[in-house]
Structure formats: C-alpha cells, structure tokens
Length: 199
Image (tube, rainbow, N blue to C red; front, side):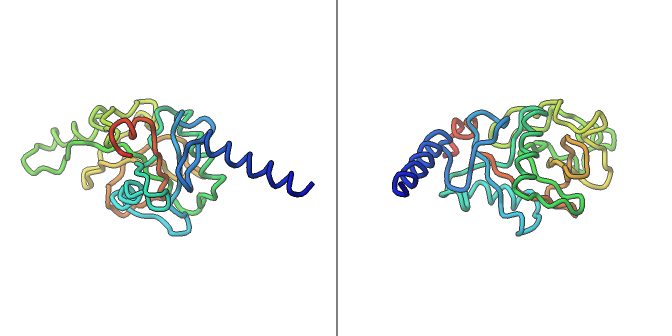
C-alpha cells in the first residue's frame, strides 16, 4: 500500500509541475497574471533598493537562472492576489516596507535645465510610468489614490512599490529607486516578459 501512495504523490507532483510550467522556487498564483510564475527573494534577507531587487529577478537567482522581472500586476485584483500570496509566504508585517513593482518612470525630473513647473509636470505624469522591459503604461487603477504619483520636491521618485499591505491600503506609490525607503522582492516571470525575449 505504501509504494502505491508514494507513486500517487510523485505522480501528482509531476502533474503539478507540468501544469504550472514554472521554474524551481516559482509558482502560479490563483488570481494572478494568467501564465505568470512568481517567486520571492527570501524575506529573511530583508529589504533592498529597487535596482538590486530588479537585478536579483533578472539574474534568476534561485529560479534555475530563468530571468524574471519585479511583480507586474495589471489591475487591483491581480495586485490583491499577489498580496494574499505574499502574506502566505510570511511577508513581514513590521514597518512600512512592502514590495517593489516593475513600473518605473522613464523620464527623470531632476534635470537642472527644467523649470520647477516642468519638474512637477513630469513627476505627476502617470503616462510616463512604464512596465520595465515590457513597455506598457502602468494602469491608472493600480495607483493607491488620486494623489499618486506624488510631487515630492526633493526626491525624484521614479520607481514604484506596494507599501506594507498588512497596515497600508492596497495600491501603488512612487518611491526613489535607491532612497531611504526600501522594500522586499517579489519576482514575476510573465508571458509578456518571455515574449519580449527574457527567457
């Protein structure tokens, strides 16, 4: 009887791998982007800046060297699904850190040749926030509220993240890519990234 049970478990695991078609340490998320695989940089390693986070995902560290990007939800429902999954993976609840997302403003507002009004216009232009590597504009519905992106006069907040979802409302904010506020890392290997040649 025991060999039969062992065979059934092994068979089920193999079917699951074929069904998900995800690299090692990655998995599909119910309600996430269809066809995407998700994985985390060990949350015990702490937070990091966006550049290091993206480098980790692109290198496919721990994912059989399969390249990925940062989490790239397309709508609030997908963002909520990623949050619920991250909580199941024990995303820390202390502090304000959440996780980076793959949207980045493609134009800097820190150019000294720009007037103050021009800088503010760039910082608050939602159409400049692009899915890095995929080149699609971040959907308006993902922003945390109507005041985002912010108009911080001191920092050029070009990167994006979901704040700590244990204590903060769902929705994306803009942050400095390498500022004081750092976040955890969730990687996503999506059909769009594979189609763009990131295999």
